[in-house]
Image 1: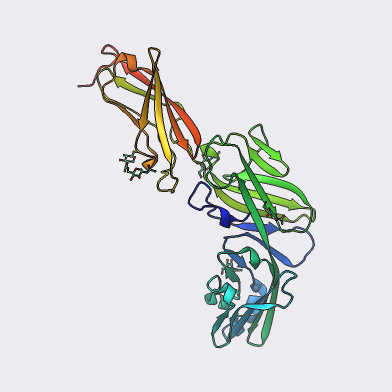
Image 2: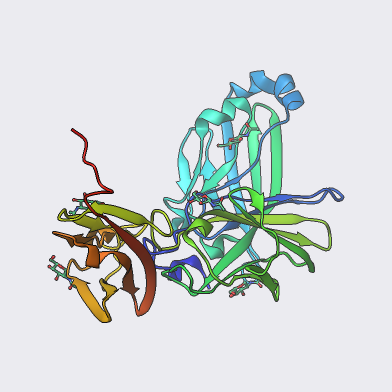
Length: 339
Ligand SMILES: *[C@@H]1O[C@H](CO)[C@@H](O)[C@H](O)[C@H]1NC(C)=O
Ligand SMILES: *[C@@H]1O[C@H](CO)[C@@H](O)[C@H](O)[C@H]1NC(C)=O
Ligand SMILES: *[C@@H]1O[C@H](CO)[C@@H](O)[C@H](O)[C@H]1NC(C)=O
Ligand SMILES: *[C@@H]1O[C@H](CO)[C@@H](O)[C@H](O)[C@H]1NC(C)=O
Ligand SMILES: *[C@@H]1O[C@H](CO)[C@@H](O)[C@H](O)[C@H]1NC(C)=O
């Protein structure tokens, strides 16, 4: 599955993203890893030493040509982007607005190619040929793809089990997979289990939202990682709130989602409150249909019989999440208004 299938703006939004690779092993063609939709920079630059030696020549005219040698189907290399001596920029039609170079970087010996957003067909071997003064420079690298999958796809609601998976087009055998959340290694526990290389979260909570990163280690010691942002819809605020109100006064029992469903284009969110009082079950439907994510229950005048536990049940796409709120009603002796 590619990210193109994910309804953006819904629960899972893969935002700030980077994929990287470190290869402590023997030198080989540099590999750059990235995810579909990312911004990727294919590096090509002079070393500080080279720069010192040839900075004068960089002030002469520079020509840069980036080519791609695709996977087996396209044997012939084809031009991705070319900056001629005259400064004229040419781009392959398929890469039209997506590929660019920063010409301001040329004089610092930096000829890197930017691609944004990355498409899966961009994978392959890339080569840059740079000519400046009497010098030439060739850069070769491979662009590989990392895929992040989140199941269920689309909207993620707290307490619904979810499965995270990461894979890449690396040809070697996968030997290890680690997950990081908010920058910390996620320990395997009863809540986070490793299943066939994927990470399952049995009861996700709102605090599982935020930046995640997977790190894949292959048998040749190369590490590939990808970052993504997880958003889980659930309740905001304390887990078991208590509301205090004086007899005869009004009370507002909070029930607030961590995101506004209408702003995130999540339709069909509704809520109802229930409360057991003297053997009777009272029910209030909150008509405001999810707008704002706030389903506050307003009681205009509370009496001692109203005290107790209230339950706010919000249904989202056929799933229901609940939160209990306690109302404490203070009688005259307990409640001494100031002034
Ligand atoms: C080259 O430029 C790219 C952006 O165009 C930047 O990300 C990279 O760090 C630069 N590399 C060097 C060595 O300056
Ligand atoms: C990665 O996973 C996706 C979906 O699970 C699958 O379509 C793709 O073929 C996999 N890629 C590799 C290189 O295994
Ligand atoms: C991780 O960060 C997100 C915000 O980026 C926060 O909502 C969440 O509580 C954090 N969770 C943990 C376990 O640190
Ligand atoms: C939600 O409420 C608004 C007005 O408050 C109304 O226009 C809209 O049709 C309602 N949507 C649904 C799905 O009930
Ligand atoms: C949204 O909720 C806040 C409380 O969280 C409230 O103050 C505000 O008036 C609400 N806005 C609308 C448009 O309902």
